[in-house]
Image (cartoon, rainbow, N blue to C red; front, side):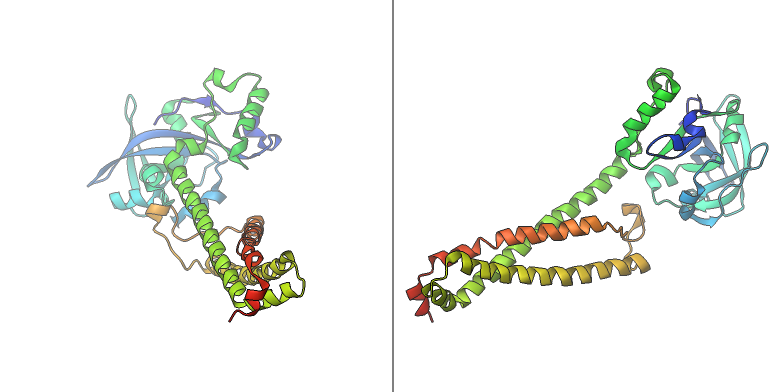
Length: 338
């Protein structure tokens, strides 16, 4: 869990706004250690962060206390523990803990618990990570100023990570891989988490396809019933000279009219329920399985519009199938149909 030191006083760190697609950059360092209490011993990894840490993004995970405060000189003796670690070791807010660090010679630090966080990523994060001051880790490792274990780069889209890496290499005037610097996607480091989330997304797509198939079958059945009920009317229209195309368009129009009404009420009810969930978070989830405690709602109106358009177009095309029966109806038999 130890990091190879890098010099981070770079253009990317000092002026991230100059790099397209880069939102924020912050330094970090990891150091393995042991927390020892009167009853328990637990192996942990201290993640050192600095004043550049995006506290506003992490604040929603703080469930007790506050985040670290960084002094102007020296380093902070405060840490933020996860609820998982605090429960295991029976540590409470503002308690002092002893952390033994693996090095030669071994070193011990007495730190105060300033806050407790919970991300629900227990297996990958909460069960291991303690957040502390990066200057403490630098002191333990005898690092000079502007040295860290790595940089975390926040981008607006992971698809642009290669472009960001190329831009970084150009500003350094060398290939980043040459100097033991490389860019890793968070989706690669936490592959299992993202695969699970992608599986949920695929399930949504499968569900949409199934719903669309069911709707198409139902609309075919409805139009066939309408045709059977209006057999005499079809025969009369044919006897008066109406073409099959004209008669088919009547039933297609009726089917589309039903679809439009269904889409209106479906959107009204569905989006209304989503709005209620978005405001009041009524439906909960098991955070240990889903990494979140409530069903999330994200508003993407372009997706809603595209889905409505796809449903309308597909069903309109499908409605042409049952109306083919009209061309086989004989006017004489239809008029006598009872």
